[in-house]
Length: 492
Image 1 (cartoon, rainbow, N blue to C red):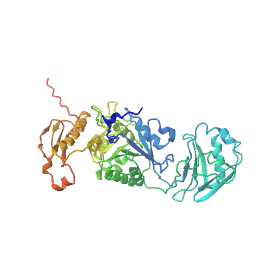
Image 2: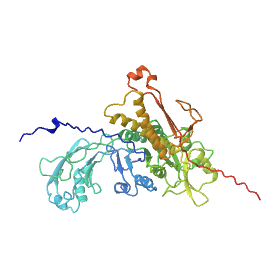
Image 3: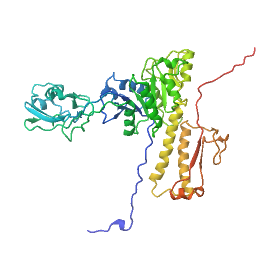
Image 4: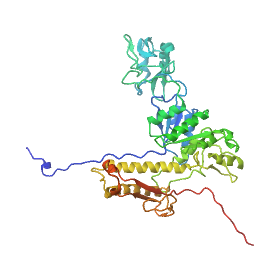
């Protein structure tokens, strides 16, 4: 029976707001190394605790650095491993991930006259008379393919990734490879090995050796997901360290670079030529150094402790001084050596004569405290994202009126309240310049003050460009106690 639609009488429509933009993860470290596990095309790969060892083993610098990072308590949740083409790389074809049934050795021993075609370094290689009837495992299959490739390349079975991989025997920009194809005659093994187009990953051509700073620049453009950077290489040239520090300092996206020096010149108060002195002289606020005589990746542990901070929590802000570095051998220093490191803004995990060891001083190369740079980076991103989401998720608009601007101010104040809740910001006396209704020396009862000029005071050009009036914020950092003087007066 024909009926009328209820919507003719009551029409209800559901309108969903766009999904709000997420804030950045200020606890994500990128460990950059040259081990040939991740190709330059993939660039970087995320790992949870315990995941790195499966791909890199226990001897790779990337594992050692990430293990120090994850050994902190509380434990960070994620690390990225990135690839630096420190030396020229070879072209690589990564086959499809084979299921358990596809890995069954019977699939391969049935082949007595197989073949396939693949082009390596611009030369077509036609493999024929492939006899797999005698193999007992997939490594044996790869060995026979390598023999057929002759000097053109090698084939291996990657048990960790469950795939076959073909690598050119040459390196550099002329090292190239294509997908494998079926042969003109014989049983096709390219599909059996998962090397055909549509199944294998895109072929990765070789590249020439790249400078460290170029690798960092490449990964900076590739992903915004990482915030901290540590290079897992114990033989970095000072020029490379300075170049990376300069890049991180001038990058449009806020990041932090950590470097461990094992050069004992850092302990010499008269020396001004060591890397710690050079980084301080450059006045970098986004790079920190740490001296460790025993561990070339000690800075990873410092990163690990800092990156456990959850800025959305209550009373979660920390100072790095007095914290621990699990797995790192604490230094036993003289007062003069410790003073030399302090004068160069170089951190150290050091023994005290009360059977404790602590990080000191937790500073960047220009003397700023790590926790302040870290916290203010979070605050900047949190405020930016909150206002963006106000504009982005609004179903109508934020009007260019005083009530509309007040919506923005209210949004900012809500996030500033969180900076007070987590302990980054606290009530205190304002020592900055006067603006709006605040004066120098005034006490900020909330720990912050937000001022937006009236809409009617803005220029016609700004109004026609739909700009909000400039919003100014005063913030008082909570700081942290690092030193205490106590005077005891005794009367007898």
